[in-house]
Image 1 (tube, one colour):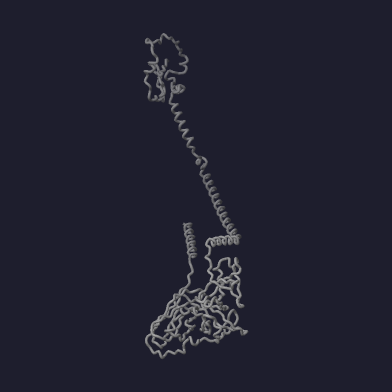
Image 2 (cartoon, rainbow, N blue to C red; image 1 turned 120 degrees about the vertical axis):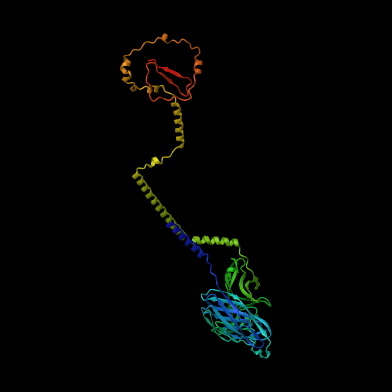
Length: 505
């Protein structure tokens, strides 16, 4: 019973271990929902956005889009207009909800929507939160168009200002007066929200990337790239591919997505370093990671001979090679952990050796106890456990049957057993002395001549009836009669004739 309980407990533990190994970690989920208000032309309407999560929230950011023909952004807590888009930022502070309130002025009758361009949310522990996106529908009815102030349009003047921003431990000053000639192609002036503050900057028309004009401590001014999705700054360098197309080099390391014949290096453009990957088979080609004029990120191949850029698509990974690499990696891990594997093997060997020794000792004690028990009760195991030879037993049975059939013949030597001298005592008048004193008459053939001659002895013998059953051997010889001579008959099953012995005494 105890063994069963132990086995059940062991099986339960193993099942729990496998169940725990099968548990997967899923990201927390959240929902970004909006209110659907109604208003009139010229009036101001509030739109509420609320991010709710099933866990505690940390930093949150979202980019919203709206139709400027119907709505004009006025302002809001944690919300800033960035040239036709609204940037929401906030911090959950460990709570499960973050809420924003935005104010819009209705410009025309109709129905319009406020949608989500991108959203990023972190839990309080730093893990990503998967957000389900919603939208807001604003219904605008007839009103007073005279209330609309064209001069308050966000496109005419931004609300962003200057200030200081720290990047990689170095402080920069935000320039509010950006000369139009310095604004990169495909970018427009817009306000940028960072760290809860709104700054004057430029934004890509077809994307969400910002270019902010900063001055370092020595007074040197230049643009820096800001990605609101990752909330990181990097050097800004725009390269014209054609009259209408351009790319912006990015500092993101995407080497894992490239084949092995591309080795990581760096490429310097206008004194700024960017990550690049050189082709080992053709050293004049490099691959860089960049943002195109459509706001899409991807790889581009740079030809150092012609000084041209071309879109590059990494080749699909070879699955067979991946399998070989995994096998090679497994072998390398085994080799690096060879000492550990040997220690584990020795540990298992020692445990098995101990188990074998314990079982052998128990078996030895059991045999000794059995020997003592047999000695106490006088049991001979050799006799009891002597193997039975079936062939020898069958042969003995056959020999016994054969001897029995031979013993059925009457042995003349056994005739003396029928006549025991002790059975004839002196009372019967047959003492030993009388037998010796009595003389024997001489044999005279004429006294025993038979009147009838035996003409044919064979015929006489054949006429004899064969005895089917053996005559029972008398236990005691019959008493001798004086009047008639003793006639002793002897017949066997296998005899072909009978012989009668006549006692002439």
